[in-house]
Figure 1: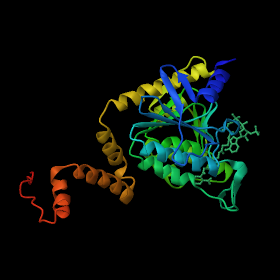
Figure 2 (figure 1 turned 90 degrees about the vertical axis):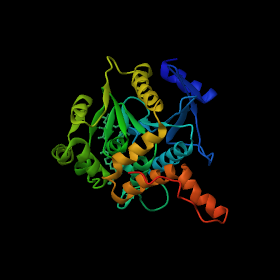
Figure 3 (figure 1 turned 180 degrees about the horizontal axis):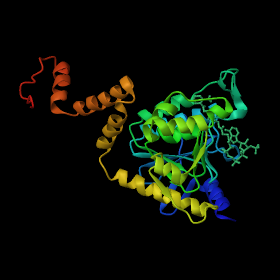
Figure 4 (figure 1 turned 45 degrees about the vertical axis):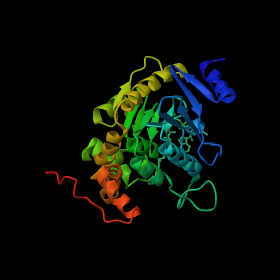
Length: 307
Ligand code: S0N
């Protein structure tokens, strides 16, 4: 048995996979329904969730079902207070995600059930952007089209040195005029963003690093087996652990602050929600609620009017 099949059979039998010093346990959401297009795992005792797009035979292209499952898993990871960081990745070393499944594209989006198409990947992009925990894209191989946009909406990107980034829209008859354009322009600057979209070139991990598209590139001497892939995961886990050592509230507020200007009213709402959340925890905020419950006039006189 090679590493890959050993780890696959271990997964099936025990529901857990040892990866260096991390033990991954298969997770589910409250519906209890199985996932078919993704693998959803949590690292035992670590505060890390990992969501893997599992369509390697299609270079991890997503269909509406894939996105539905990703949304369920991200919701669960958001609600689970033991989770502090979420990794988004693709199965295998050939692709993170190659975008929407072109075989399912119809005149009104992507269709894999019912009679009409949909672009539910846009909901997923917004969900990742608003999720109050850091989301890290762990990219090996191709991050193309809608897959490239998914890594861009994540907070951080850790790339393997075989990673390839690019947009194909104008070549295959599509475009993302939302986050796929605006966030890209913020990340790499307006000139480079135009280059990426107008010329539809692909870029190596080193080029992406230089452009500010990724946070780091994990160099790998030889990148063909599961063992080498663990180097990428090892580095990603290191970044997760560094984040997890820090204050979750500070990180939560910072994520919303870093997005606020670009996300307009929705960004302000997210940041404002965090202010309310913190205010609820103060004695001053509590006085208002307690007075209402006790049917008395609230007394805010003891609280300072700070300069
Ligand atoms: C990723 C590429 C470069 C990999 O090349 P490689 O390694 O040579 O592999 P292939 O032999 O090409 O592929 C292996 C098998 O996988 C299938 N496949 C790959 N990608 C897709 C895909 N996206 N959809 C369906 N199938 C895919 C291949 O067909 C092959 O299958 P077999 O073995 O059966 O022949 C290369 O594969 C590539 O260029 N892929 C296409 C990349 C692409 O153009 N993606 C779509 C880009 N557009 C979007 O993602 C749109 C996103 C979106 O949803 C959206 C968002 C906002 C607004 C609008 C939209 C919108 O859709 O319009």
